[in-house]
Figure 1 (spheres, one colour):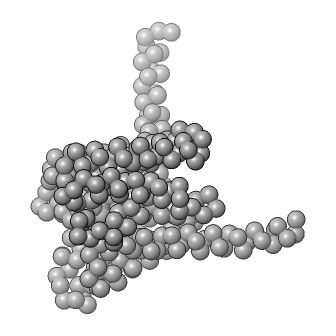
Figure 2 (cartoon, one colour):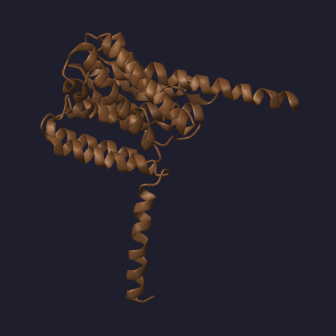
Figure 3 (cartoon, helix red, strand yellow):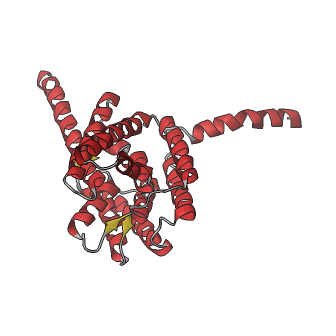
Length: 283
């Protein structure tokens, strides 16, 4: 083969490689993106508590995934999901101690294997682990509460990159619906409480919410199947968050997803069983 034909083949394969990288089948796309959030967020605004604590969370998550996956499924699991859970815990959890990072990561992974129904886990792992820890150990554990402030460039980079990735994996409608609902409910909260609308909208600009809207609410394993009902469910998540915020609940988004997401999955499973019951009787 001539050098010219090799160059043409290589040039033609480049778009295919990028298309394959951004395809829904690439399980390493989300880990690459969350690593980008970590790097950009920490270098620009110092969002990490410490490198060691984040490392503890990631290591505990990967180790729990390896052990539980091997024992319960008989094979070595793919670690992409565990990495996302571990790094999410490392970014979002705030504590002076090391043990909350390890415990939260392990509880997150265990929820995938223990809290299952009809072969599916019904909670997003990191959302479950963080919500449980915030509820049981509020004196020791808090969450990331930093906004980008006047540093717009990191926020724009992550939002643009995140939107492209979420769109490529066909989940942008979930994120877009939540953002629109959040803005509408933020204005409504401002009207009800008399606070400036800017303060109600401000949380959406922080790295915590970027993890929430790009990873937690879009988790394919814990969302309903229909696009229409995915949008309906995520709008109820935003509504539940508004109600919790009006009730002075500090960690409203985590608790809202913790309550609404599994309820939607259980309702979907119940309707599925109702549809298949006549088929089984006829058979």
